[in-house]
Length: 197
Image (cartoon, one colour):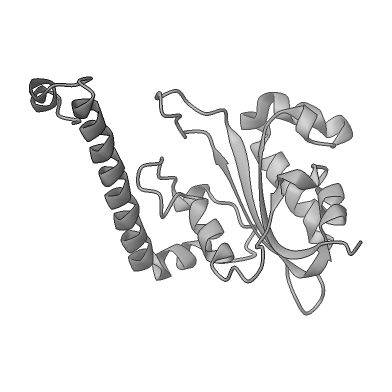
């Protein structure tokens, strides 16, 4: 069986030592806020190994610690990492190098030309207006790419995508309200009294 080779990929992972094969450095995850810079540096150092003289590794990392579930509760803090390797590498070797399971690595399937764009945008939720909007300054790139320029250059595209997402969510909300009215779960007066409806 031919091994899957990847060049551009992302992974996200919780700060739980059971998900990281980092030996004595696993203790860093017990207090990720204090050790965030060390964790970022370790990930970068583990991948920097792939740099070549002609081509450079590109990496962007961020912690999502302000995301919320539908019920309003905070989602457990986790890291998002975007990577472009200089050359294609086996997914098994990359996962081993990172000290994570390969099942947590996502990469473009087929000819998904939008994967890099969408994944870089997702770091700060640039195309997800209903999610917490992280600051560009929260993304660490180790100067391997100009993330701020990427965001500013594509601002109009992000606004269009955000409008599409909002429109779809409004339509889904209306469908839900109509269903509740149809089945007698909500009244006209309740709709008029609730600004969210």
